[in-house]
Length: 281
Ligand SMILES: [Zn+2]
Image (cartoon, rainbow, N blue to C red; front, side):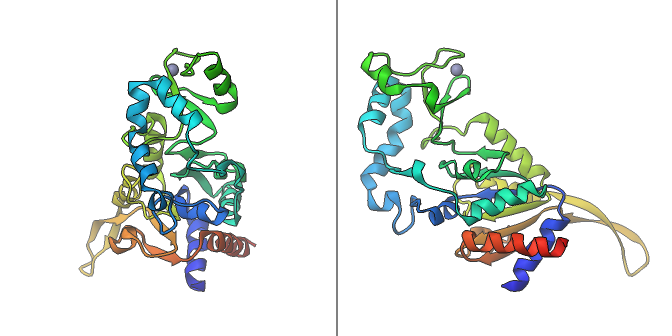
């Protein structure tokens, strides 16, 4: 274990464009339940999952009714706003401050990377702190709209300040396309990174799952001398992919990650940062 931590620290020091991909395992340490784990939100309440599958359709077909449902219905995410970043989040923020980590692309909607101080965060599945226009893609902070007052005034749904279309929460529903800006930027980051740190996600849900696979495909040409003395060019992987996950995942078994550091992100990420500081002294 110790040697893998050191290996990760060395790989990060060597990297020129490191990015992190994060998922639910990152947030469970902040007391946020995941969706499909043993204590997951969907596992415990299949009815909520069924409703969630219909949310996007409901928004498209009747945005007013959708918003009434949002305001009247139980919040499946409960006290998400009260959650605080954990040492894993702070470790990633520190890596960005050190100039090593260039970007975090996350599946989490809890905003904890932003709270922890990361500046370049691609919230792939949206965030609970914003509203988004599904026509023009503009985002607005949630405070900009007093949705309850709109409801009382009979003015639901809230409308986009730029194009006038009905807006919804920024969080991406089932069957809803990933907003094109984050989808595009994440893909671009996966293409150009030379180190990908995958934290607390098995990356099986598409299209997010394509990001490590895209990074794995990237190769560069390297000249090598054969035994015969002739030079030849071989393709070598251009990206180091490190997994920090509680359990091995398909990324591990399919050989997409170079190595897995098995354990809790809240414990392992800070240890990597400590080791990295030790190496840079
Ligand atoms: Zn708009």
